[in-house]
Image 1 (spheres, protein in one colour):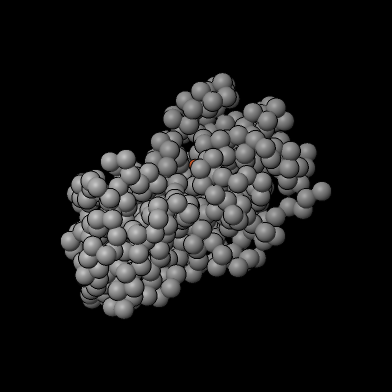
Image 2 (image 1 turned 135 degrees about the vertical axis):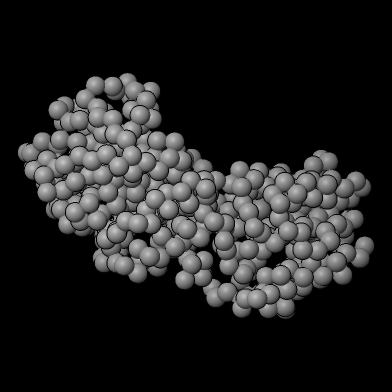
Length: 411
Ligand code: FEO
């Protein structure tokens, strides 16, 4: 039997850990797993905030029973309809047939579309409220973080914010649930990866939501993924990190991402990165796109302001994994980066044209001439590569000290 886990005043955690799936959304690796968080606000009336992935309905129900015993569940608030959170809605209704489901118009449309559910629903609009007794649930519409129906629920009296995916992170909750019970350090990098992979496209809606939240006092953030944040310094850090990433602001570091079939393009990458380091850039991350997962490369492009991409020409196009990376960066509308590119070809170059078009589309600042090499380094591309590394370093460090390691959290 589970014991009730109270994470904030009258708020109980009933979420679950997923250490089984290898990829979130069948795309993004989960080396540290992920949690699907759900919460009960217990008062004269009871409310469940979001559910969990359908694979965990059984555990989920036992946790709910541990908090409620034989009491009924009066409301289910659906802040987000993605199935990692709405997956257990039908199961829940089968156990609590009198429950009323709370969502906005888009939520309710999706509820009907996904599960055929249209009865016993309450449609809410921005700032509308439901009283549970001593606690008042207030609803805040925050569309496109990262789906159109996403909203947040705020308990006015205890200043607890149920933020859906916002402020979420990969990583299971091993034993502890809140930041008073566990060490937050393992989550900061995973929060950046989660944001860049899942939410990164929606910087502008995140900024809109942060502005809406700015006037609210928040004593606890209960996201749908990762720890419950209750300590003021952690709440400030989480909000600052989301604010910074959604503005596409980043540290003075450099990502060098390249494809290389036989090592020639990689040699250029080493020369460029080495010269950037000689000129003072300490945070340099190199990714061979054939080995690094795109998930990690995206994380680092959200951490660092410098980006240099290299590719050989392949079948008159870019190297396929480089092409895929560019598409992912474009999809996320990455902004405000110092950019450089390099590449190689054997008989006809297609790299320069396509990376130039990418830089132009993204409106990145091109810091130096591209380094395009025919066949091998013997052909004399070294000087240009050194220049690219040196100028990139100057750009990154002008007016700023080299950023300390892992400083992408806005501190
Ligand atoms: Fe965690 Fe957008 O679902």
